[in-house]
Image (cartoon, one colour):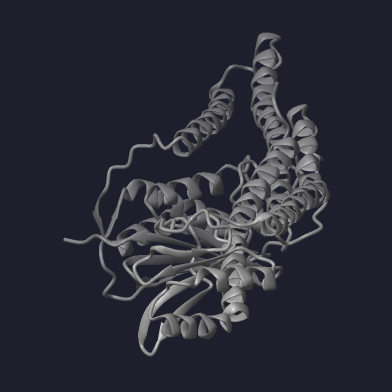
Length: 445
């Protein structure tokens, strides 16, 4: 049976509290017993130290311990405790109960209650209630301490369980919400989101989940748009092909050179779309082959400009390049980079009004060459700018041929630049133009 996270957290907390409290109680109990024993010894020594001079005078009077037994018995009756006196060598010379006289001091006894000194000489030791361990009163006291330690440990364990249950509910509630939202997404509901009530790790996880869900929803929408766009882009030339062929079959149109040219143009549109889709798929899968070689950026830029100059001249656009003379060579596939440049310039020409200006600039910085294509066209709205490199994304949803292709050009350009180890970005202001910038790695000898 699988245990829930709440149960495992509770068991772990109980184990930690139990171990911590047990170790603390054990150490505290041992320390209390030691301190109590030392306290008893210090207290006894101070309380009965006054008897040592009396015994010392008796020792001097008798020139030894002979005759000390009657005094010891009187002392025992006076204080109500057993009294034992040993000489300086540890031999018992007096016992109020007479059973230990002549025997050595038991090594397990506590320290003597008081030392008996004559001048600077130790002549004996006084023992009161000599036992190997704590007496009954002391044992009762220590047992009481241990019971309180045990009670405190149980209270701490119960408090730990209560606190854990309270905190686990607060901690695991957002986790349970995340789980429920993830299960909804598993069933296809990409609108599932979780509320974010904190900025801790759980809150950051919720933020990440919501961002992921938003990205998945966006990708799903793009996928649906892609299906619709591909269907549209395929349907238009296929419809034209079908119309031309039906007209020729029914005798409504002669199969002359003009008809063949129209059929050829439509098939080329289909071929370009299929080629773009295949190229994008290879680039995204990292399987696109690059024929890298040291290449001068100026040559690629000038070649792309010359390819687009007829379209620019037809609209009265000024198409120029501003290139420094000391640009380093770049390590690229020149054909692929020219493809990116042609795509960016073609977009600039298509979206720049008659009489506008398109400028290509380049500069070297930090081991890279940065190339920018800047136009004075209609620009891109802020809500569309983050998506210009997405597949099949077009700000203009009318899907007319005049507004561009199927929305694959910039997506392909991004994948080609990334395959070279560079980056590409776009900035724009509506009605003031756009700038597309990409970087290429410098070639080092």
